[in-house]
Image (tube, rainbow, N blue to C red; front, side, top):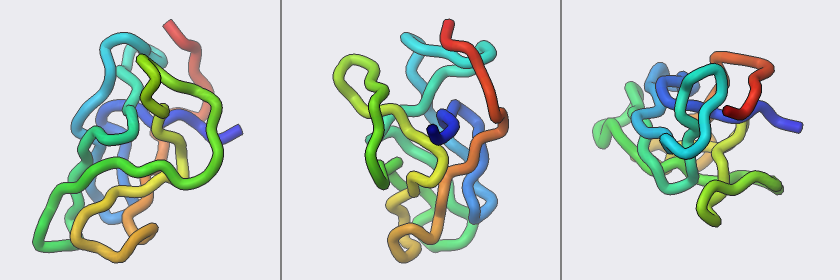
Length: 93
């Protein structure tokens, strides 16, 4: 199982996740959902949408939860700006 991505988690280009759902939290941090935004420090666009890559089970209000290995659709090539969790294990509040 891949770790869940939360608000303020980092991306592989030095960016960070900008949004999270207040309906689900891990260690007090809102969980990121597909379609929310993250920054990118490597491209001119500088921001992009979180995109699912691979299978997953979790949803919030029928929207997929972002997991480690998903990516940011910014100005970089697909899959080059990957989201990375700051935490490895968390509990759902």
